[in-house]
Length: 362
Image (tube, rainbow, N blue to C red; front, side, top):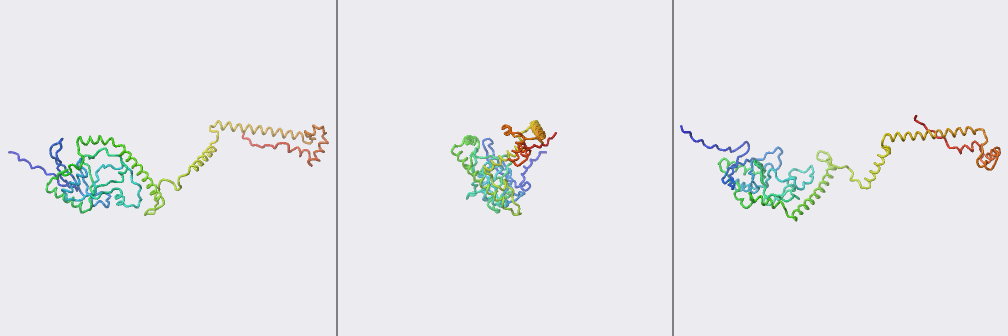
């Protein structure tokens, strides 16, 4: 019995919620045959939807050589002619320029997104705020990894629905849409020409490089000023729930140089007083012993003075001046009483130094 030839299996028209759209890739020198590539698309359904979500279409398995021109031509020529606002590829060049300034907590998502991206009149992306001050590009055309994704945002929800409807029609009819048709001369070529251009772009013009650096520094200064103003405003203005945002920095402004210097000197004096001149323990012991020796010596001297005073108690006192003049003790007593009105002992007592009382730690 001769086996009957089996019919070729048809590819699935849908995978879960995705529509499998067949594309015909043109032949290239390395593979001179046409081949079929499947592009999967569905309405965007993120976990955190935004106001733009209803007019967004999510693409999966984007061709590696896809550009914005390719996708616009595909939807314009073969999928109802829907107008596209912007296209965001996976792994796009973001975050290499000046970061956007701090936005207020009350600011809506729509306003943030509209400020971050601007478009031209024909729907092409004019530039984003992250592109300010970027270094020159090293490649004239970006390539994507296999199985990468993209997010297409249409001008309205009706355009997005029309594009999905036309994609389902083409899939059910079994039509294969040509890829890259009508973009010849509008995109940078691939192959060896691409690498030759890359070699030239590695050495940018000095004037262009200097302009890029100057633009970066100017945008950085403006972003820092805007950030400081926004943080200062958030520090004093409560949000919708009545909470005040805690920002970096204290209530008072930065200290002046003179005040900071005075505070530093005061801290050094306080630290020196707390620690003392003697840092090591043996220095402290030696200093304590020296103080004790001085106290003992002073105490012994005071004891000697007291003994001398006790020896002269009840005797006639003679002044050194009177002794030089040869006056007897009796005349000296009379002379002292007449001149001072005090007893000789009371007149002589002030000449003695006061006793130093000290408590010693034995």
